Structures are given as C-alpha cells and as structure tokens.
Image (spheres, rainbow, N blue to C red):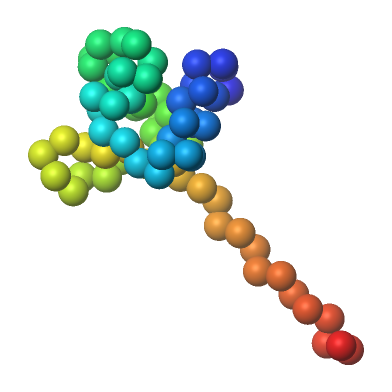
Length: 74
C-alpha cells in the first residue's frame, strides 16, 4: 500500500472503527476526498463500511486466523 493508505490502515487497526469526519481529520483532507480514499480501500478489501447510524463508520477488515492444531500424541 502507498504510505498514506498504510498510515490510515494502521490507524484504523488501533482505533477499531471511525467515522468519516475522524478519518478526514487524520489525513487532513475534505470529506469528499476522504470518502473517495476510503472507497478505494473498501474496493480492495482492506476496509469495511458499517451502516449503524446516520454517518457510516469504517473498520479494518481482518483475515480470520487459523486455529492451532495440537499434536494428537501429547
């Protein structure tokens, strides 16, 4: 990922989820530009949109971890 996208993804990982205005403040862009950047990350599968209130929230989409298999001869 480019540096700006990597910064955003890392920040979302620490935040858990964030609204459009919060992300716009982080990347110091207007909301239209921020919405376009987030749409790119959604299309690439890095971010998911949550429609829980009047403003959409964004959360990092993490891959499921594989469970650990213990040896049967313990």
